[in-house]
Image 1 (cartoon, rainbow, N blue to C red):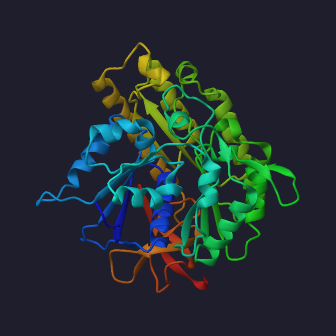
Image 2 (tube, rainbow, N blue to C red):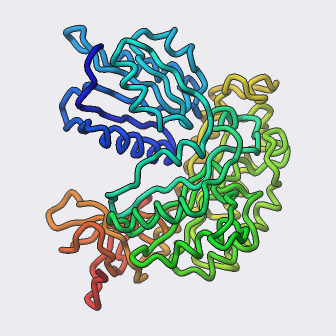
Length: 443
């Protein structure tokens, strides 16, 4: 390759932090004069922003690389980015000659320079992990949709035995106060009405404000709430160990902080939680939920669950069903355990048979779906405000997010980005329907 690519496409997989990283990489490339390829157009550069959480993640990444070869034998320049790039490093370039550059999630600020290197025939690799250096090199954000992601924390120090995040994202590190406030202000200036703060353990964020006073995520949220034009604040993903008194109190005291908390528990069995190296028990988790609900009674709780962890018995699994019933999750993500190379759990004894995992996952998901539908049905007849974020399938129909993060369908002439008052008329497992309230449409 001798010419710099003129068009690009960033394809992100996995978590919301990867979505954020993908957006920032696109901004970096755009700042170099490259244009995002239009639908159906073959991009001259494809960035595969990969996720390493699930089993066979590397193999799936290489399959994606192979699909980029065109019928005439040509291909775009290919950048392998994200957590698979971090985990594989130079091995990725050895395994596939189609990969022109490898960039880890803490080094993507170097992507334009690496693309320039690759255009000369070199195959650059950068999997260093200086997160603060990355954020300091990113350009100021100028445009946004009505909802925007904002990474405030990266990495993890918890070392759950099943998880690769400490190895692919590094130790916990918090972005500086001024950087976060500056980016949040730019997002609002660019059109954002809602900001979701992101981190592998987002509630572990800590820093010093403009006066040098130390504070946690709750202090940051209270300051963000002062930004004119910012109407909604969310954060994800949280760890039970970092739910401080101040953060719990903020849920009841900051109106702009939405009544939604994603707080993974993973299992309801104390034996499994101990094997996972989770710092909470089922009881301490439930008592934490009680404290959050005391501060904000209408809060929606979301969670993560793993079934089939090594050594999980039928009783352990029934304990998980019990905690699901005790909490009454509004939504949840559930997965079968998949061993990640290099993690302690990958060498544990007591592997659960695949068919047993399948059956348990189906039972869990039926239970979770029932609670989610019950939560949605409990909103029927309620008046609430949605943030319109896209068009519906029917003429005149728009879709917006409720305070509890459900999609709400409504007939309205409101534009994307407007806050609209609606009354909920019906509920489905994953969405709700409403009618426009005549009182007002908030601009």
